[in-house]
Image 1: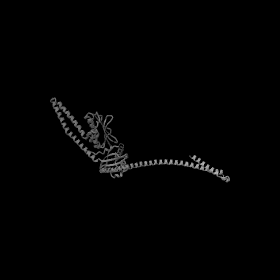
Image 2 (image 1 turned 60 degrees about the vertical axis):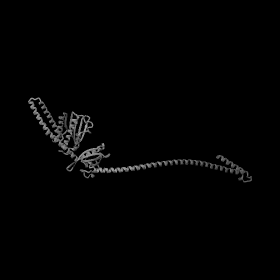
Image 3 (image 1 turned 45 degrees about the vertical axis):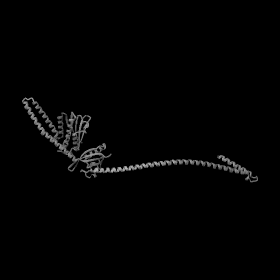
Image 4 (image 1 turned 180 degrees about the vertical axis):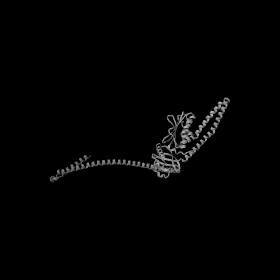
Length: 452
């Protein structure tokens, strides 16, 4: 189309030049001659053609650029619409997220408020509970450093405990009790189980007995609950003292009453036997047999009396009493029974000796009556840590569920062990030996209140 327009413009200019040259006269000046005019017109024509071509090409380029710009604008508009859509979508998502966050924050604030109210109620109950607890409570770290305390409502031998905060427990408790406390703290943190111990604190003319229960209170902390057991231990010892007096009275009644009565029957039946034998009566043998049976009853009464009367423990010592226990068991039950003591005991608390003797007596009688053993052994060992009493037998062992069904004898054994601060263990080993082990620390040798 552009070429066609150019061709038409050239033809028009050429016709105009020819028409103009024909009107000129020969006598005109040279610059007015037709050839010059034609050349000039041709030059102007060519110039106009070039300008027109340049103008047309610029117009075409301008149209092309406008088209490209329109395409770019269209593309940018499209991208802008996409970006606007994406922006609006993100704004909607963010608004929804903020709405959810606001709702969750409100819920969290509500739960936090409830938790704070519950914590306040719990703290109030805890303070009320602590105010009613008479026990002393120590909060310590794993090394026994005192972090905090609750003084309790009862009497305590400690004064100005607030000055001991941040100091080792050895500055509050006696050395042996502080050492055992640190060991119990570490054991409680390791096993997450309650650890129990007892210790004594001299105060004035008295000795106070405390029971300490230590529980883990965190990764590196523990709580020690100290209860004053002095009055309870005194009452327990009075009960045991009453029981011991009743046993003594019963033993004396058996010895002085029934024992003497059987002795008289024995002499009478012996005299009857001699009279019947002198007369040659055949029933004399029966009278002799009655005499032997009465003598056996007298021996049984003597054995029972020895078990009831703690005279030997008090007069001759624990070793002699345990040796006599082994001999009596052998005669009474026909079972091999022996006693061994690796080193002499020396002087120990009489009440402690009585408790150990009763524990050994109960263990031996239980084994002889229920385990059907062929051998029973009693051993007493002393070392730097303390004293250990071991009663073992090769019988049938403990029946299933015996700890839950344990009778009065087992409960009394545990009770006596608790009174003297000992640890009582019942064990059946791989060598088919049943052992009753009572271990008492050395610190308890002189802290057991005396009983009459």
